Image 1 (tube, rainbow over the protein chains, first blue to last red):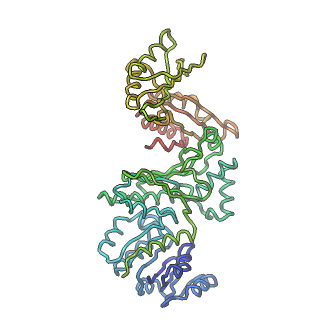
Image 2: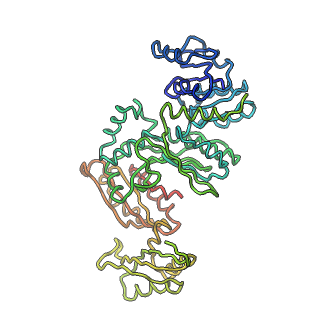
Image 3: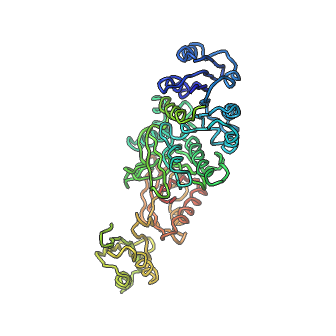
Amino acid sequence: MRLAIVGVGAVGRSVAELAGEHGHEVVGLADSTGAALGDPLDVEAALARKSETGTVGEEPHEALLQADYDALVEATPTTLGDAEPGFSNAAAALERDRHVVLANKGPVAERYDELCSVAKESEGRLRFEATVGGAIPAVRTVEDFGPRHVERVRGVLNGTANFVLSRMAAEGLSYDHVLSEAQELGVAEADPTFDVDGTDAALKGVIVANVLREARGRDALTLDDAAVSGIQNLPVSALSLAAEDGRTVRLIAEASPEGVRVGPRLVPENGTLAVTGTQNIVQIETDHAGRLNLSGHGAGGPETASAVLSDVGRLPPR
Amino acid sequence: MSRADGVTTHTLRLELDDEPGELAAALEPIAEHGGNLLSVFHERGSRTPGGRIPVEVALDCPAERFDDVIEGLRNRGVTVVAADEEYYGEAFRVLLTGHLVDTDLSETLREIESASTVAVEELSLSAPDGVEAVSSAYLRLGARSGERGAALEQVREIADRKGLTVVEPLEASG
């Protein structure tokens, strides 16, 4: 496959670096300042230029969208509301009958129905495994069972929040202390608001709910439809009390065809959902096949890029 | 617990009025519905906040008749606080955090209990930074089968009004 990649953050960069290993070629790479094109593109040189000058290239953004690629990898930062520029990038590629692989949650969480109707008119496919649970094949597993056979999906979908909660519980340290430690370790971003207030987990929940609802002929949801609460300022005393009764607290996202709910919940301390550190877990409840648990790395450049590239690997040749 | 012959072992938590004959009367429906009493545990002197006597009963019965046993007890006017709590999920835990003491914890508990279906069975409070700071309470609540959702809704509503945070049990969302 010939790939054009928009977004050169941790994920876009890793996709560019790992594409060759997966037997794909990169023909374009764009960041917020410009684009680099090539046939194939010298990824190493473009990324080196990005490191030195802050930009991958001087070509206009439009030139990348119009380039001769098979699949567009959309890895710009997730934005809420109109989900731009991710939505327009994805739509532009689909309108040209190119495949689109999203790592950006915005378009599928905030404008799922619109994006699906663009995809329906296109010869190109739309894939978005990397938007939920990083390396964990959550969306694909739901699709493999058939979304109509999946009644509910729940789990730990944010590694930062999980790191904070598991470390607070294990060490008896305060929320603020653990959060700044997480920032020092690079586990939490400089502004971890969306991770700790539940927004990030809710976006992932909405995406899963949209897959479940689409299969049942129901309209898509957006972030506004989700009931969300976060873990900010949870006192360590709460975790200690729960521990005395063999329980702990995890930020759990639940998605069903009925809706999405995210919040701190009491779970058995040694139970399946009580993953520790930055691990994620996705629990899929099916009608005939029981419950399935998938755990793994929910974030990280190479991990998420692997999900992108496995989506690419499943695309039909153009 | 389940065995090859279809007989299962169950635990019931009952609450009885402190009157002669109450215990014997409460146990009758168990045998009537095919149950075999294994043990009765009654801690002398232990009382619920409402002055009733908590009793824990273990019994064997054919799996399909267990619902009849509970039904029979309730028809006899016996309060079944929890039946196989893990299986029936009747007792559940919630965490409350926030300014619990400032917002009058006893009143909060009374309000929770005034919802007729809920009983506060156990409470642990932790206020490591003093009563004026944010503290946490871990509550074990009992609600009748099928009424847990409503009970939780009640807790949520009270917490919301008092600016407290509720950490709900996951299994309650079933």
